[in-house]
Length: 499
Ligand code: ADP
Ligand code: MG
Ligand code: ZN
Image (cartoon, rainbow, N blue to C red):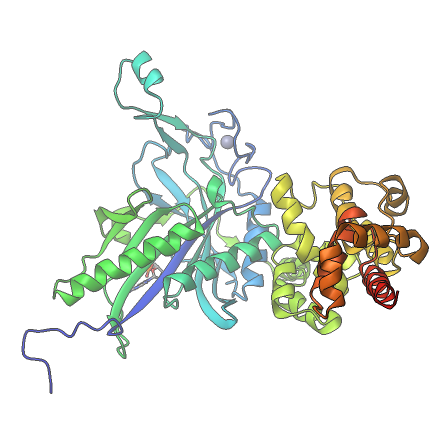
């Protein structure tokens, strides 16, 4: 039976979610896009500015070659086409943090287009098409001091006010625009993470969402399942973490679904994510390209990238994470998860290979490195553990000089202080006790102190042996060879029975 007229079926699967992301990435250049000012995060306010990036009259921009190289590097790694010519355009709008009153950007002739990013989510492969990548300059930063700096406000005799820092004005930005190929908030977050990993791998950007060197605007709409036409989209801004990207999208999907189910249209608009309240709030209605009165930047020549130069940039593309992960699995028998973790940064992947690149190395790294990094708050490259030293520790464990526990202790020491593993084993007293003679005395002591467990084992309760082994490991501070300890304890209990 069909629904009565006027009643819409409330079916959670009746709509399909459609998402496209616009990602801004600050390039890791030494200087800004059109002047020689340093591109450095965290410098004192307005200390990295000059007449060019302050937009003073009479100044002329000079494009930063390195910024174009980094764009091309990222674009080629994403399989993009690079058209033979490209140009800069002025995007006009008025905002206090934009001193020129226009942003030098690219409108109809971007530097790159038509790429793809492949990633996995829950071991499902995904492919998202990249629509375009263009180069533009960042704006400065408005620092609103309403609540947190009442002291300064009071001094200036104002309740609310805003400070301007132009250090960021003119910093080179990539804008990477995806096609609307994403179908769920978690997919959007996974795409963004994969993009970040790739750009970091290429050393194009440090991609720190918390410092704003990676920023994301998310466009989302719903459409009835089975239809092709796109629904009305909403753009969400101001998400400062991967988690907030998926939370904001999940909120917005439900908000739109509720409207559609009530028969109300979705308004095309820009909304901002309110992290504290966990909801999106309307900022403004849709802007159109004509609102920005784009026109070609008259102070910059048309860009034409020579074939030979593009080939040269191609040659800089290192082995990419997906390829490297596949190679690790084939060469060293790693699991998918192990390989995926190792290629999550170039630092980890390089370390793994330099330490010998075996399954054993991967296992030890996965077990120990994340903890060491978490506990110390420093990265693998700031620590003192060298890949060669890890390889030596594994040899010491393999040959029985060190127990597993001893190996872990030694790694921790190496991570913090560095040093020669062979020499440290002696100095730190980590040598494993495998000699039966050396252990015999400890075995007898354990049996004496734990007659109950010994008795249980004797009367057939096999698990009681674990208690005895545990006690022996404790007595020797983990230095006993567990296999030898086990055998000696079992033998000693059996002897007791005979006697
Ligand atoms: P605009 O002209 O509003 O900037 P674009 O066509 O340039 O829109 O698209 C901007 C982003 O929005 C792209 O990432 C694109 O994939 C995405 N997008 C476009 N239309 C939709 C839609 N109906 N639903 C979801 N995302 C969309
Ligand atoms: Mg757009
Ligand atoms: Zn400058």
